Image (cartoon, rainbow, N blue to C red; front, side):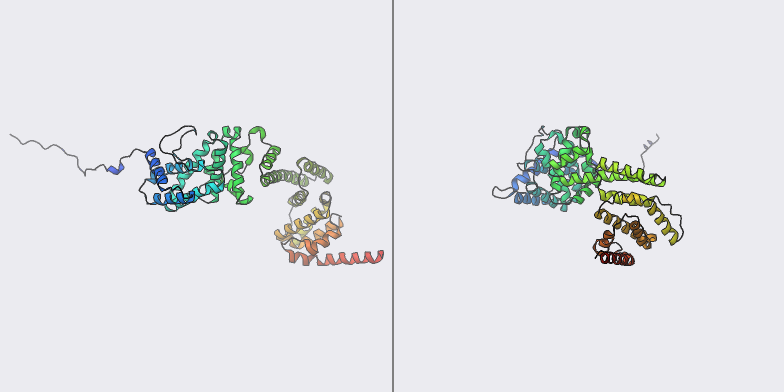
Length: 422
């Protein structure tokens, strides 16, 4: 009788399933209750909010709670006093905190202690920044479900996250507000208005605009309902809400855009040889239509005239001749808008900076000024004022020295006139 044949076996090592690879069901409710209980246990009746929050954070730092898995839930508790649900009116059950960001008053004094506590938490667990971002985004996405007062609290809270430099990417926060429904209802505009008012309480306008630009929401008109997206509504809204600086900034931006468009038209007209009188009429019309500042127009005219120059020269003299020909040809255009000593001085300083920044025209500055004087664009008194106390800081020493012969000639001419009159 033959022996039984051995059954075939699989070769290689047996791989055991590691238990740590088995997913454990999430239990945010239990985590939320544990965090809330820590805050409750750490609180004392005779202690201040700051002291109670500080005590609770110290316990959190030494706890073995799974923050990496339930980071969102931690900040839901800090912001709302419990777990965050879809829609403000729905109750998720479980324990609730008496003190949270949404339960305090809508001002920095009341809410700052919570963010000082968040800073302490982040020092030990910086990876939780992403969880703050997640929760704040969800809160802002649900903004229309909150009362006006709660929206103001979230606006102050958002302001503090950036003012205290918690590290949130602005674009991941603000862009959720560009929502058709919330914009149409005015919810987004109300939030942004409250946010900007609070942020400007401790920061400059430039800092705010840099933040909004990083957040890709620096076009504030996008927050206005479509039927209210015009300059008058924008200015009125911000002025009525104590944000005149914002209203002025928005008007300045619109002026910059209008001036840019006008500049393109001017360069084309000058290059094509449009009669100066026709261009003067166009500029005056645009000035009246858009309420453009005189000083900005003077600068724009100079840059437009120079941009239209055909710089074909290969040496200094050819460059100088090209510049002087252009200035002489369009002096009447400049003269049409330098209607006061202040605007004449503005023109002189614009030319000074222009020549300073374009090295090939440094030595041409006195010739340009003399030509504009001869063409009755610049007055004698303006030139003397510029030389004594009105020059721009850029290249001042060199330009003042270069102008000395002309200024001396003006002084002598003035003395001769005085003697003749006497």
